[in-house]
Amino acid sequence: MDNELDDDTGTLGLTVGAATFLDGVLDGKKLFRVEAGNCCDHAIEQASVLMDCSRRASFIGVMDNEPVLVWASHFLCDMAKALMDDAHMGMRKNR
Image (cartoon, rainbow, N blue to C red; front, top):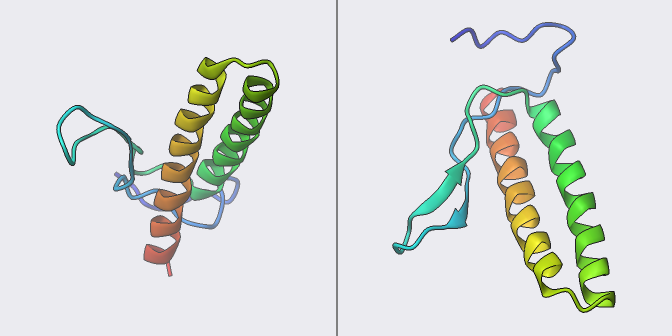
């Protein structure tokens, strides 16, 4: 895989594929992992979108007494955190 970024791709680096999210049934096992080789700029943008969706779902879930939206918010936050963590690892590696 070519680790060189095009000028229009971004300058922060690439995700490393180490961050995981959503607990599995077995202790220490996760269901999902961030894919390595994605542009960190894009990962951070997508984490921001997920956080906004989470904020909205949380607010509506609490105001309308919809627990399923609160759980959705929890899962979206977990995904956003994994994206941010993996992008951070990629940016540190890119130094």
